[in-house]
Image 1 (cartoon, rainbow, N blue to C red):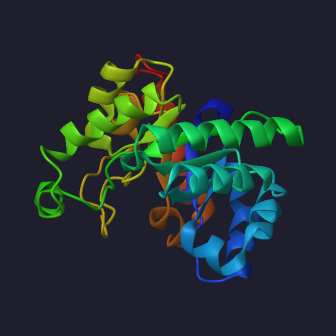
Image 2: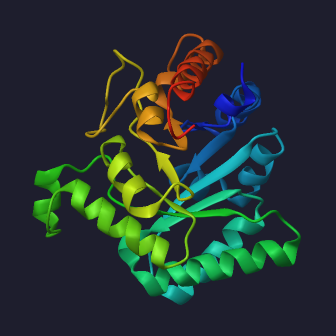
Image 3: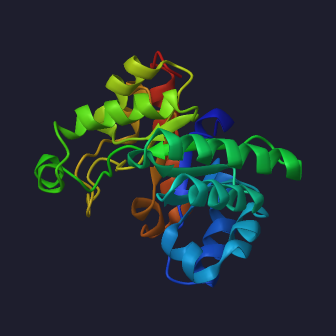
Length: 247
């Protein structure tokens, strides 16, 4: 299978125990370019888990969604990249000063430690939120409008890209350009359950729309054969890349 296609898949290691997470990391690292570790696992297991996952051979996306005052987020970002994580994120809703501190402190920490430059991205609008949910929390406009607005703010704040739903890929790509990294959760193979995701697409649809990195968890981890499930998604990515103007 194409290394280029594998590099576009991030497997979300949303599992209950350290042992299960590490076993999945070892099993799936050869099938993917990125392994994603979320907030629950990081809080329960600590930064050493990130180092162990990185040792499995894939890049690590440390999905902490940092959101606090600029000084706190900057220091947390520095600590996050010092674990060896290749991708770290914050919430764009934290504002430009927070995002600038996030980027500056993380890059400085990576350089000081002799680590590769990390990809630093911001979450726009969670894929679990729809228009009704946004209205209840007081955000104006549709999820798509909010996501584009926050993506532009993230780019202006010096970040490398954003997390967005499949529905916002084309608009953010148009607003922010080809070199802006788009990390896309809410990706489900045809026929898979959507769970708590509200704005979803298939892997092929997301790649053709302009996504750079697809985040997939349950459709792989809950499959009878996770390796086969990952390979099936990578094959769909490869097929879509062959016809996508963004590949």
